[in-house]
Image (tube, rainbow, N blue to C red; front, side, top):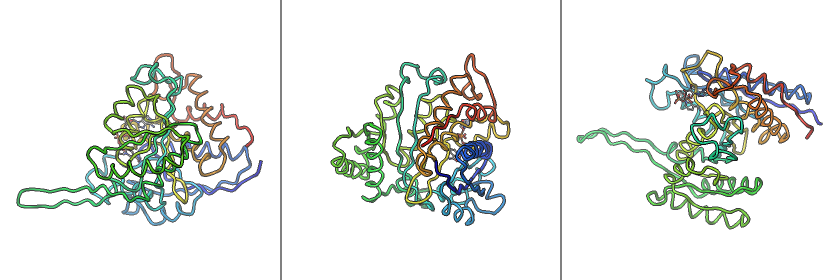
Length: 362
Ligand code: NAD
């Protein structure tokens, strides 16, 4: 086993962000002790915390540190304190800005129904059993990044949000989805709104062309409204879902409910440089500071970091297995609690995972 040096940038952000990022750091430190890795952590501000301290949601020092890192672990940004701010003054501008600065164009969101949690979801266990899908969301184009305009006229206000894609932007994300599907033996569902949107019609053309390079991967197109319905009706039919920025944002929150809690969902944002890893949930101001936030979305994001940025896929598998064992042994943060659960706080849940971590050599 070779020792390695990693530079990890931590961006805790707001609300429960600092609480869960601290747990991610504990996990990385535990893995580092096993391998004798030299890990350097650097912590920087983003979102509301950065607005308060430095007057901007994305300080230049944060961007520079993230660009020089092997991987970035982010908590969450936002909160009611900053709801009165507009546009690029808002905490969310920090999030969009760091994604853009790192050139991470693909957001991977695995959705897995853990057996011990089948009864934590509002859906029937028999619908959820075996769900193991991956949403690949385009992250730096589409509706969220198009021009936005607000024009005051004599007849009132006219507002515009543009949805723009170029062929290469679509092609690289679709190719990544097909590669991942091929490597994991899954099918591809490309989700769009081609009955209404010109951008979706072109998206379909690109998918059909890229698919020719992957004849062994079954694929299909699906309209986003149908996909929203099918995810609840029969989620097991999906392998890899690839889609536009806003569609992916909404579908992945919907899919979060297949796992029982949004606190369970990890994500990886990948491009040509440092990968950005973050739980899917927001800053959860309603529970911030109480030590009850579910850290598993963050711990599973660290697993993805080992898989995609740090070259240790076995560590990733070991983390996922340890999470499953902690759940099997009944550990539940309050968002997951049902009958017969060992309700625990953020620290205790992480401890339960660390105690069950069995890392086998790569
Ligand atoms: P949210 O995800 O913060 O919370 C939704 C619900 O889920 C809340 O009841 C919360 O308590 C619960 N929850 C979320 N994460 C949890 C966890 N780890 N453990 C236990 N429970 C958890 O979404 P929201 O309430 O719509 O947004 C709150 C703030 O977060 C807003 O300012 C929003 O803009 C921001 N936000 C940030 C991100 C991000 O940083 N990536 C994503 C979504 C929302």
